Length: 400
Image (spheres, rainbow, N blue to C red):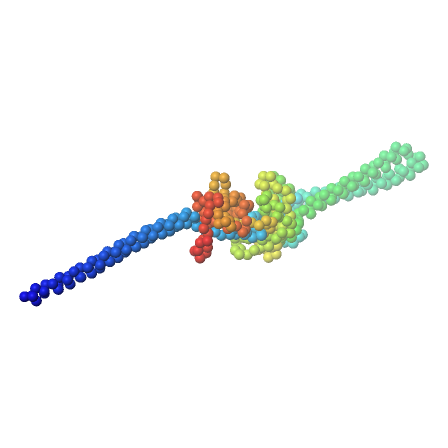
C-alpha cells in the first residue's frame, strides 16, 4: 500500500522541471523573434534611406545634361572658286569685201586651217577694171599736156629775157605748167585708188587661224562695205591660245593676280583639266554686276577646245585667315542671333555668338566667334543656358 501510494509522487516532481525548461525556451524564442524583427525593421529603414539617397543622387546627376563634343574643322588655306565662262577665240574677225562685183570662186571652206596671206576667194570686178583702164588713159593725156605746158613755159621764159613777150604772158605759161603738174598728180592718185580697189578682188587671210563661217558662193553679188544688209564673206578665228573671260565676284577680286594659275573643265572632257593663266583684269569693278572682268588664256595647240564652248573656271584663291567650320546641328538659333555652345575648363556650357559664312550642306563656315581649339557641343538642347553645368561624354561612352 505504501509503495502504491508513492508511485504518483515521482511523476509530479518530473512534470514541474519540464515546465520551467519550456518556459525558458519559449522566452528565448520570443527574444530571438523580436531581435529578428528589430533587425529586419532597421535593415528596411536603412535600405529605404540608402535608396532615397541614391535616388536623390541619380536625380541630381540626371539634372546635369550629358553632351557630346567635337572640335571645329579647319578649312584649307586656299579656297577653290568655280565660275562659269565661255571660251572665245584669241583673235576673231569678219572678212568683208572692199569692192563690188561677183564672186568668181572661193578656195577655202569652213574648218579650213589657213595661214596669213592665204588666198580665200576671187571677185570679178568688171566696172573697176574699166574705170582703172579709163583712169590710166586719162593720165596719159594729162602727161602729154604736162610735157607741152613745160616746153611752152620754158620758151616763154626765154622770150621774156629778151623782152619779146610781156611778164604777164610768161607768168600765164608758167602757171599753166604748174596746173598741168597738179592735174598729173591728181590723175596718179586716182589711178592708185582704182588699183587698190582692183587689188581687193583677191580676198586674203589677215592672220593664221580657222575659217568658222562662209556666207557666199560662186556667182553671188558682192557689195563693198560692212553696213546695212551686207554680210561678211568669211569669219576667221585664231584658236591657239583661247581667251576665257570670267566675272569674278567683288569679294574675291583682291585675290586675283596676273600670272595666277587656273584650270578649265568641260563636260565633254570629264576628268581632264586644261591649265591656263590669268593674263589681265579690268582693274575696275563693274557697278552693274559688282564683278571684276578677268581674262584667262588657255593653250589649245591640238585644237581640242572649241570657241564658244561653255566651261567652268577653277581658281585656287589663297585665304589669309584661318577659317573653320562646324556641323549644322551644332548651331543654336536664338532671338539675339546664332550661337554655338562650347564646354569650358569648368565643365560648364558657354554660348558664343558667331558669324555664319558659306553653307556647305552638312557644315557651315564660321567667320568669327570661335577658336579652332574650342570644344563645341553637338545637338545642344534648346533649353541649354549659358553657364549651365554639363557632363561630357567621351568616345567610349564614359562621362567626365
